[in-house]
Length: 149
Image (cartoon, rainbow, N blue to C red):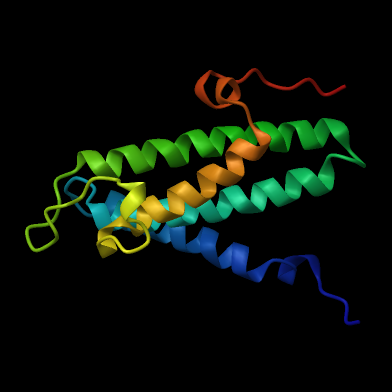
């Protein structure tokens, strides 16, 4: 087994972070218009991937380090709230002029629905995983900061 330096331990996560920072800089330098559905779909994909990562980290951290695991679980729930808000914002934006007029989230039509509904497929899949570990109260109310003890 080869040793990996701490600087190279997580290259894909570092690249994703750099990509998000770069996109943020581009938006702040230009005079951007409002967000569009494509941008929110990509952001939602990023948030759901982060959500899955936090879920795994919280599960792996909780047994040996309960306080740190609680903080990660809190971050996990907060990130889900952000992910749900991005999904809701996506559906409040008007569809692009050349896209399908049917842009409502209809689980009974998935996965055969229009391509624009990939965000709904992703959201439903992630939501199912969230509901196995989190109560609706945890997801819909402000979360207190966990104690360090």
